[in-house]
Image (cartoon, rainbow, N blue to C red; front, top):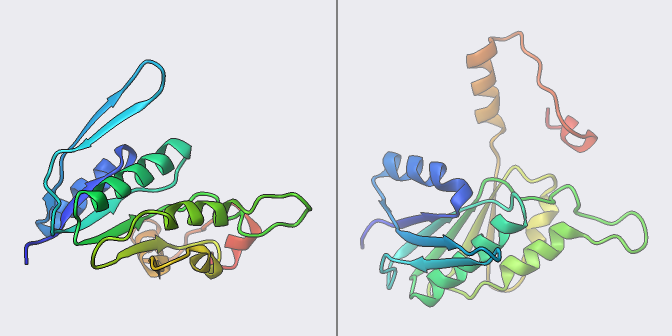
Length: 180
């Protein structure tokens, strides 16, 4: 079987390029246009039929989330054998539960959106990196398979390379303070 094809949303092209360079995987081509009214045109130029496909993208903002969703749907409809979505950043992961009546659990609604991506013939999996809480993986529904990856050891190694043993790590919220 051939090596996977790798695609990305616009905001993650740099990462897909680095992964392709490091693995030798073939980058997939996408034609993109933005119209004056704010709508977007996407066309997958590389034939994905019967290929393992990797899609790199994060839910950095609503535009990125919808581009990820649209491309994933297009890749499956184009005949991808297996779809692997790599999400280095899962936005709204700190909104994983409601505290006050009427609050929307956005981590769950985003997972439901991504769960509605059609299944590739040999399955669809999502790799999530360092989620705010592990329970978010259970918000994904249906046959989509979630894999939660931890990068703590890589972050510690990089911090030690840059700052030696005497460095300080900070965090943005109390939930992440335990990790730090």
